[in-house]
Image 1 (cartoon, one colour):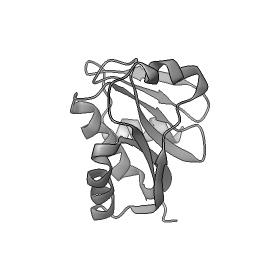
Image 2 (cartoon, rainbow, N blue to C red):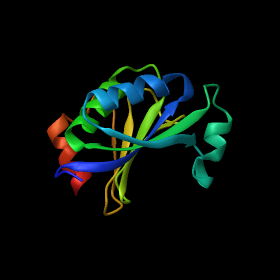
Image 3 (tube, rainbow, N blue to C red):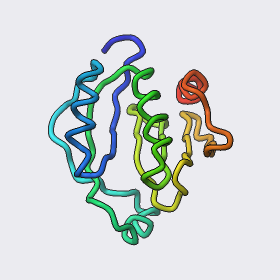
Image 4 (spheres, rainbow, N blue to C red):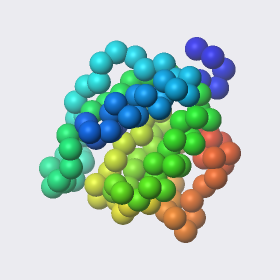
Length: 135
């Protein structure tokens, strides 16, 4: 794996998976294997049960952290979906929708377990988000 590359899990609506995979590949990411159905964490299952959107699928891959952060920022700014969670606690960076969060907002779970909340009024730039993810 190249320096500054990270394993990722990108949770996407089924209708947007192909577009995401194509964008990842066009930007040098390696998409690995088949997508799988997203299974929300136990404590969040109720949030997803009340949602009225496409089924969510997980895209697995390896990409530069810089590209992933730019993709995260542009996705959050689209405001056409609920908020997002960026989870950097494990071996893979996980990006997923969270129906209970307002559109344009996101939570960042850092490696040390610290959680930071951002929205359109206090959003991070790409460099600061990279630093937060790496902590």
